[in-house]
Image 1: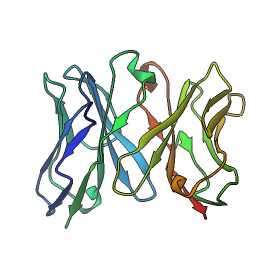
Image 2: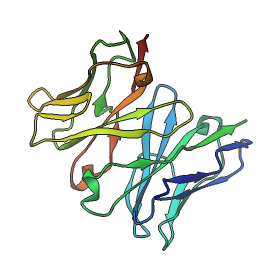
Image 3: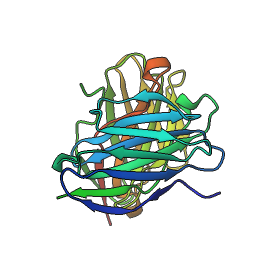
Length: 115
Length: 113
């Protein structure tokens, strides 16, 4: 079974631009979560989608948004990029059975650099 | 407010010895705890978990202990191997509004040959 796939792996953008990151979950997984990892801050929760609905949201500004499609694939978008948005963005999927206590399976992330 | 705390940023142990990684949490609504391991340039990989109805869970060389009264959990790796060198994240979740997985900042484990 294929794992969680994130594209692209690396991205360089300029301040003020916007970016869209993509995530394909493990087949059969309906929950997709997004996390931001920066040095010294661990993994900060962005949002979670389940069956195309946002089920949970972290404490990030409105510039960060996401969506999920009917095939469970998900995208996240960051508008008006700032230097501080440079980070590793991780997508994770889990099964839909009592998903709150099902392990998340992570992709290898998208490394975003904002210059 | 950091609800999951890994206060030691790094740990170095000798190959063959025990590695003990600690984690504290503040949210009493958390009832499910997990450890993840992360190598550079890869996503975190699920290692082991424990439900709040247990105080110990074992999987091969890895054992997680949970002390609910102290809001503390620890991961024991015995014996430690050089391939265990990675960043280890503690994570916790609960039901309802706490259902998202909350992570600590991670501990970098180095196992010396």
